[in-house]
Length: 197
Image (cartoon, rainbow, N blue to C red; front, top):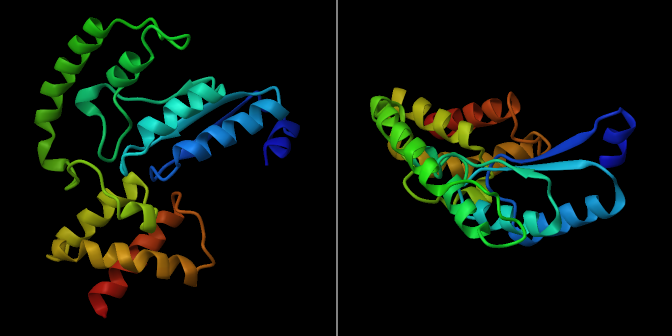
């Protein structure tokens, strides 16, 4: 796939782990192999949903990735990205040191901590990590959409059943990737299957 992309003239490739299921060792191997074979800039985008993103980013950095996505701590984790400050602190004093100022990052985090309060009603249910996603492979945006659909149907308590149904729906559809719009189609079908029996 990398070779096919390069033949089209791209000068960089983004690896997107929308569900947070990329293991640290797989990240290391993938980045190492691509960098060994091709002269291309690589970027890694991981969601923190399962708790593996921080480790995957670190291993990808060790393997030579050129860029990674993070979010300021007050807007990070759960459905989003690993915290910028944690990665900056992890890399400080190493050959990967970002040079970013933790104190300046904290002032940004404080600002967004206040902004986030205004939108609390729109936040998803996830607190911490969700290992169910390792099986269901649900992207963060899909998970919040499922929560919203179930809440509208007064069936918020059915999320576990819907997450268990998603792999079956994916199998029925030939294991299509869970990226918009197919993620929303799979999710809606799983909700319908659970709600209608």
